[in-house]
Length: 153
Image (cartoon, rainbow, N blue to C red; front, side, top):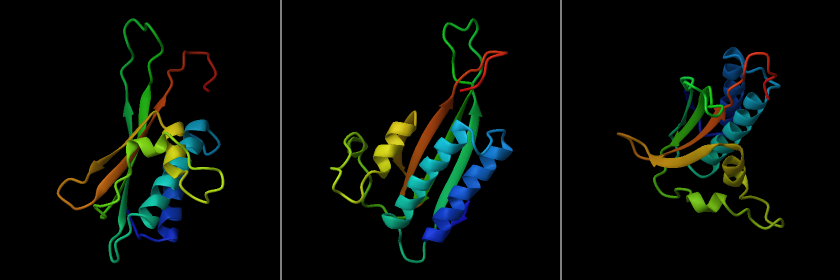
């Protein structure tokens, strides 16, 4: 979906993620929903704050990809991967992967967004947009395999 590069657009995108995950069977108060909604909040806020180009919107894509069950299962494999992608049209200012490895000093007021994304997501990265200027920041959350009769975590 496409959203205006404003705080309101970021808020609507975050709410869409939470709602869509709930529709997909991950209730609002579940760990996958809360985690991916927080990641969405960080990525969309960054798109508005650092990726804004006047007159251009940001794009959000949310996907769920099932993983086949391993046969035989040597270790529990993820059953699905939830992926969020946020694209903006600013080509400069690509976040570096290593910036998320070290949080800023506590006295700094900002700069923790990608650090949080790196800690919450199983994988994340930055790629150029295809056939358009800008970048796509993405994050993945792997859902654990739940054995029959076991409580999900």
